Image: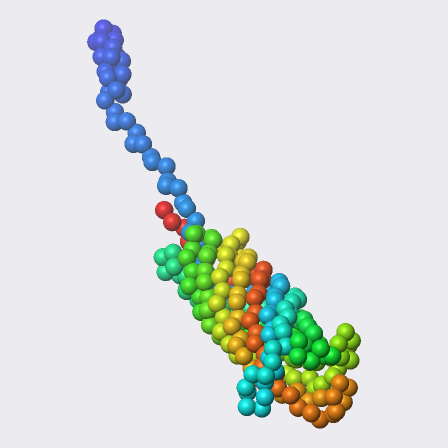
Length: 252
């Protein structure tokens, strides 16, 4: 009996390693794929901006019928700008489309001695401006390159002074002028909802004729004269925007 038990035990001992070798190997679990973040520019946004502007102003004296009389020269009205913008963008593939409204306070002013009336200086000033534009851009993930275009409006004021002084020689003329604008910008999304941009805009504001009235300093009081004033504006601004919606999307 003992021999029988020992024999059975020996068979089991020999069979155990063979059975273990026949077991299937554990399946290999593949590591999950890498996840790439895709930046989405879609959504409403609001922001602030600030920078510098320059407006080229050219004055021509004209008669009551608007016929050119004499050139009075040009000057650049320069200074700072600051304001805000609000807009909406939607993204399809890498293309980004948008609309935006912008309003800025401005202090762009300059003056020159009149070539026609050398006893007078002509001064121009832009006090504020607004832009109403559409945008088309191309996104390189969180970097957006865009162009824009639309309408522009400026709040202007014009004065004449006794040459080399701050003494007014005529009435002050105020003007709300409408024109067009084109521009381009480069924007960088540094968080899912915050972005910063540098933008350039050119405003085409055309010609407007204004009537001034002398105050008696350089000519008898009450005499009216007409000035046709042409202006264009160049703006360079730095912008910071906060955007709602359009989260970073995970891509496998």
